Amino acid sequence: MFRRSFPMILAFVCAILPAGNARAQAPAAQPDLTMLAGEAQGWLADLIRINTTNPPGNELAAAKYVAGILQKEGIPNEVLEVAPGRGVVVGRLQAGPLPDAANALLLDAHLDVVGVDASKWTVDPFAAVVRDGFLYGRGSIDDKGMLAANLATIVALKRSAARLGRDVIFLATADEEQIGAASIKFVIEKYWDKIACAYAINEGGRVLVKDGKVQYIGIQASEKVPYNITVTATGASGHASVPRPDNPVVHLAAAIAKLGTYQAPAQPNTVTRRFFEQLAKVEDDEIGKWMRALEQPERSDLAAKHLSEQSPVWNSMLRDTIAPTMLLAGVRQNVVPSEATANLNIRLLPGHSIDELILQFGKIVNDPQIRFQLAPDSGENAPPSNLDSAFYKSIERVSAQEFPGAITLPLLGTGATDSAQLRLHKVQAYGLVPFPLTEADDLRWHGDDERIPLDSFRKGVAFLYHIVSDFASAK
Ligand SMILES: [Zn+2]
Image (cartoon, rainbow, N blue to C red):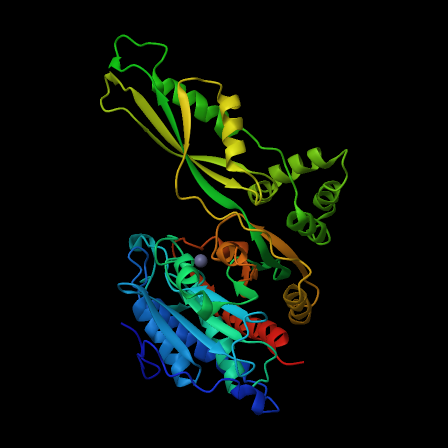
């Protein structure tokens, strides 16, 4: 159930309007961003009310809703039904008479959301309740907030008849939370020509509020690569009253204890070096000193140790990590099983080799009863986006204007996003959820009572519009 703010025009392949229309209409009018943010809040509320919990996703209804808005605004668009009940939306404003992928900017966000435990929420997670200045609902931050901001941005460009210097493509994807058969990977494989671009902005980065003001604008330029490894211990089964030294439960437990406490070496890369170098400017003196010490060969190991102890996120940004997540063994209390297994969730720094890490595991565990098997669901080992690209510099410039006094820095994402798939296609993709949020707000990501502060939402809509307008307007 959702409020129908706009006529629903449910064309699967909507009319392609004359391209390049923006160029003929000048000068561009400044859009009313206050009014626009108000409209975008209505779209966000409507999108929250369309339940796209994945699985199963059912993103098609949300895709049609979004397409209806694009259609009403005269923005050429298509809904692509990528699987039964699952849709993605592509919209486009062209700078010239023909699409120009070599310069195009893609605005990416996903339609699906993770599940809820409704009993833990203080409001209905799909009712878009506004309370005390917050809009509550699953997806309010991840990622329907950004979806609404992307929509507002392309609508503002169209309404203001902005002269574009590059194509702006809007994409609302499906199946991001499960990275399954209907995800952006499928869209890229089957419909690359519809979304081909050189630059992209997506979720992943953040605008961090600390002590009441924006401390930094973090632009996600790279991300760690997820893998799962099954660890299996084998031995003879038998009666528990006569234990033997080859009990697989004992061998598995010993192996997991070694791997779970193993610390891979800290290896700062281009992105994390710049991250700590910038963050050192605003952190307190002691922490800033250790951040700078990362660059001093004789002190870098000690510096990495201090920083890792200070923050689990910094620890994960500095090294490959191993998290044992599941254990499975035994069928009866008095039976020694012949097999025991565990799952290790691994996050590798981009460019690192999982095969080399597995070889290393063999040496650490040093037990012939243990074997390792890589699960087939690994992530994508994508190259980082360039920290000196025109788009990165544009985001830096607009950030300084919007948030004077705050710093801008690149982030290495510890989680996975659609951006890795885009980077594999040579797209300079950057993650930036544009809403100023505190750590406490951020902790509600995928959590109970997910909510977005409405003033942050409005600020984020304007911020994103200014970033895109700065980069995509004709100079
Ligand atoms: Zn997300």
